[in-house]
Length: 127
Image 1 (cartoon, rainbow, N blue to C red):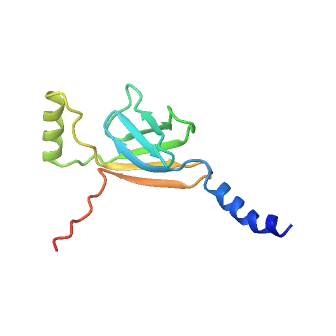
Image 2: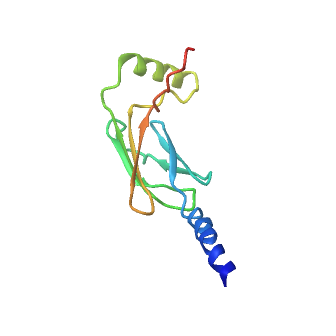
């Protein structure tokens, strides 16, 4: 009986780590949202044809085990250089630059996870 009491906290801790996966990263383009989950799955939220690019879009993620709701809010005021280089990249067959905006994914527990596009860069230590 004492062994069972000692093992129960370990079993409970192990079960807690096997909860539903959570969003850990979001990558945004003008056509698609790609969300990476904590278990390594990749979920996709495609912009529906005819949806204006200037405002964003919403829906449910697909291609993974959870169809989590998401919202993409794009910043309509992108700078001139970003617009120029984005269009130039498209002309030569590249995806272009990530648009400025926010991504909100609601996980299975109802918590909203916010991501920024393009992701912020971390400063490098010069020492």
